[in-house]
Length: 374
Ligand SMILES: Nc1ncnc2c1ncn2[C@@H]1O[C@H](COP(=O)(O)OP(=O)(O)OP(=O)(O)O)[C@@H](O)[C@H]1O
Ligand SMILES: [Mg+2]
Image (cartoon, rainbow, N blue to C red; front, side):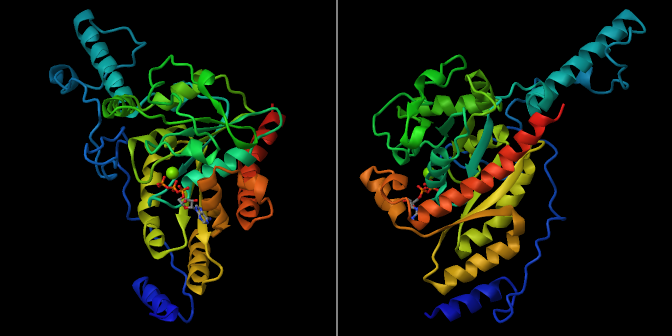
């Protein structure tokens, strides 16, 4: 089938006219956020989380205190002395339990969470194989700030990120270092171009399950580990994740200052944009930014170029980078070589550098201006 037919079909599907490249206006106003955004439970068979409609908290507090929680009149603030000791105690206990329930459901309030000083970037996608690990490694190699370090952390059980950074040894990773108190600093490995990497690691199925369970039970698991690392405001952490809404990507989203959504120039990725946007909106934490990166645009094919145009029109300024198709990414991965060393002029390197510049402007311009503010 000719590409012209492809395009016509695609535009028809979007309800548009191929002749005029009609702009598609996304309409999210009907989307309703979940009242509670708990750590979502994963079905055992796959790594995917329940869709955003699932609001079951992982911790169902002993709702078995209805006599305390229900029917009680609006309680006075905790600081007020109780009217009578019995009623007052009851109300105070009721308040405390309610507060505890809230914290268990929603996690600690933003202000009381311990956070790393480093800038954290999470790389996520709806679809698999769209270049998350390639871009995570590319940024880890190019984003280092003066006096700082760049640490790429693999939250994907495929454990592939370290290979993108030239690390081939089997070493302990998150699977082995899952308990709070484990020394993540001591296990960072040197990768290409002064990058550092903490792999996911390999282990028995049961080890993997235990790690996942820890994440499910503690929405702040990653934040706490990052906070315990010896990182400064000049350091950058890059989190690689598996595709889709998994407990791993949820942890990454909860830790990130900037979320980069990877997508490729094809119809499936275009159609997944709405789902992705909804998922991100339900998990957005304060001051977090979401930006998009279009990968594998093939300029030798007009369909791919046309899809590129659609993505630009749809995402506007939120699209902060386009990486063109460059088979040298694949070859360098296969031979364990650093593309920046053996083909620095390649379009892949150029595009990664330009993405890196855009990320730097977004994240570090803020840091610089904040440093100047009292
Ligand atoms: N711009 C590109 N041009 C050509 N090949 C690319 C490009 N980006 C990535 N690739 C190749 O595509 C394949 C998938 O990339 P990558 O592993 O980074 O995707 P991913 O999103 O991390 O996949 P997964 O969802 O399985 O984790 C790799 O072989 C990689 O070398
Ligand atoms: Mg990957």
